[in-house]
Image 1 (cartoon, rainbow, N blue to C red):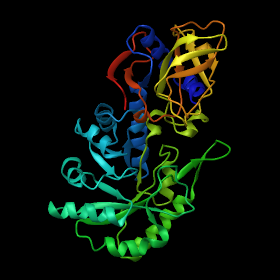
Image 2 (cartoon, rainbow, N blue to C red; image 1 turned 120 degrees about the vertical axis):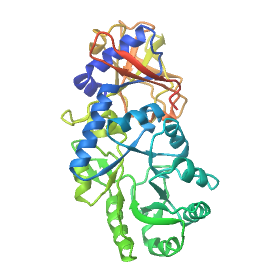
Image 3 (cartoon, rainbow, N blue to C red; image 1 turned 135 degrees about the horizontal axis):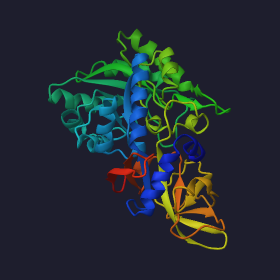
Image 4 (tube, rainbow, N blue to C red; image 1 turned 180 degrees about the vertical axis):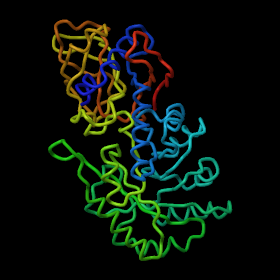
Length: 387
């Protein structure tokens, strides 16, 4: 999905990846992240957000959710994380990263709220239900705390990804608020929904989903209940291009994830976006038959939209050697990838892919590399088994 754009905008990353692999410094089944470009992307996001008065929480799951990368992002300008689940939050906390939002997609379990409040200490907790509000409030009251919360609000007609349904139904929000406002351990300060943006049919911009209207309608309901709304969180495709769009709709918080590595869907089609592609996936040819070359896998993702890859054993050749991805089967375990065989392919050739991913659900390693445009790219951190 991103191989052509990465070749155009960050060819040094591809060349560094093949060099490190061929030298045995990184194995197959490794995502390689260009730390210098990542740092620059974070700074651009942070500066754009400041210019528009928007607050950002970084999402680390796409790039391995490690304390190393969390601390690096915080030092580069985005100071708090959104944790997709409590396990990600604990991984980040190992390096004293700061949690901005937890409960965004996966709600903590009923026995975990005390740890959330005492060990993770998030800025806000996203709630999907009155029942979760009660659990959190009880834990907070026992500790003598009041936790700020935001409510995920949805309508049946809203866009929701499979496996992610949940939240306060808009037409029941008033009744839910009557119950939530009685709870002494929480304070309702805002709302959220997801996804709020989606790439358009022409692939040249993002459009708002109906979820944005849901956010606006629910904000009015909160305000009519006497709530001062200080937190309007609108995640999905938060990047330098969309930050001004979000601000126009009264959004206060965004959550860049793929933008950190220049891999939102729009980055595959527009080469003038501020964020530069900063991540590739490294494999190698394991074996071949008459039709196909089979590549060591473990890091593929069903929604990756792969079409092409690059192959070769030297950094000068690989930019010119394209192969077509074939036999993609998301129903099966990705033991091997598959390329249409080219005449000059060899076993042990490096294969470079660049696609939309979620590293935390893979079996892949993550290599963080500096100086990709030099003769000696430097491996600065290796995260084994990036999940």
